[in-house]
Amino acid sequence: MLLSGCKARPKPPVIVRVLRDLRSPYGSEMDRRILDFQGNNPRLPSGERVVVQTETGDFKDMLQKQNSSSEDVDLIILNSTDDAQYSPAVQLAMPRAVNICAGLKACPTNVPAIVPPQISGPRRDGAQLFADFLQKPPAS
Image 1 (tube, rainbow, N blue to C red):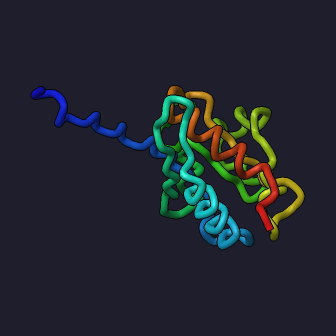
Image 2: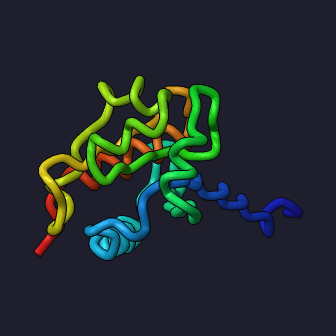
Image 3: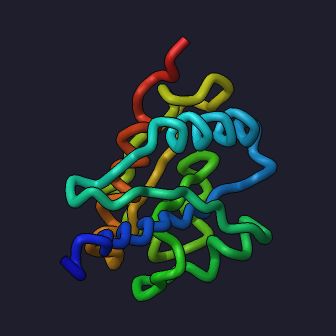
């Protein structure tokens, strides 16, 4: 009888930290896509909710700080493949990049999104879920 009043506490959400250029030509479109994603109440198969958080700061500087052991960013969205030149770690990860241009209206021919190889577990799963969402055209 004492246990009947206890409720299971919900799991904390998985925070997906995204590094992107807030001043990019498609920045406002990316804001809309993030809102669309969050509006769908995304969840991992384990039931954990996924929340996207954009890292703020100087994009080029933050990109240069990325290395093969950085775990402060779960998804890196470049303006173009040329941005990879600012980080050797990003250059190495480029073969795994996906093009999210289909999910944006105002974009160049290739907008790479990379889940760094050192990211693992639920954070990797959440980042991949968001990257998969961004590869699809927005609903009209």
